[in-house]
Length: 207
Image 1 (spheres, one colour):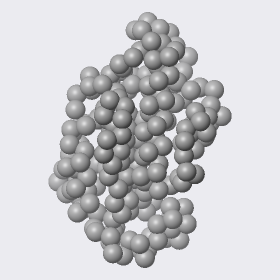
Image 2 (image 1 turned 90 degrees about the vertical axis):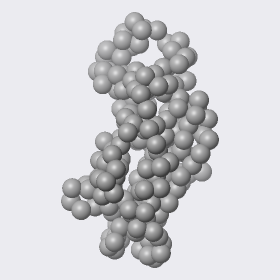
Image 3 (image 1 turned 90 degrees about the horizontal axis):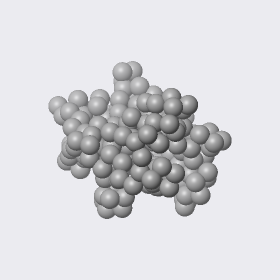
Image 4 (image 1 turned 135 degrees about the vertical axis):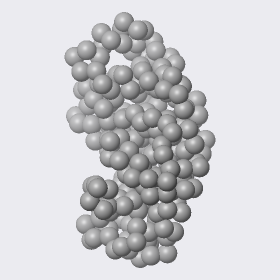
């Protein structure tokens, strides 16, 4: 999707993985995603996937995803082909997006696919738009913005749902504070690349 597309129509995604780096042989074990269309969640995607090896006990405890759960899950390649069809050419959002982008590109490469849309990071944007939050972890920002949640974190769909709500809060804040009612996706990317000190003057200038 074009970066000039509206920021309120995106796919918000989250991976659970066997570790921190696909370059070190780590793989995805769960993908969760929410399609926002005009700010409304219209479709969801969630699947476990078998990475082809056992995950360690730290990851089992951290994610709540056990080797028993993964044993009968389809292989990564099967799930990622379905996810590729789900994503299409939409732009994408994730919290700490560099992590999810690395895994998405690595998993797509395994099946000969390439990302069509672009990424924006809700964590970077929150640092610019909610500078007074105690920190910019997803759980803290959910609490800071009084976002409804069921207390489940570190499962892919639950984190995607929370990130989608946070994304809408970011858009709402831009509308309320700067009268930017229909920001483009590329504007969101630009904001995240500005220094904190320059964000307010940049937004006032374009409002």
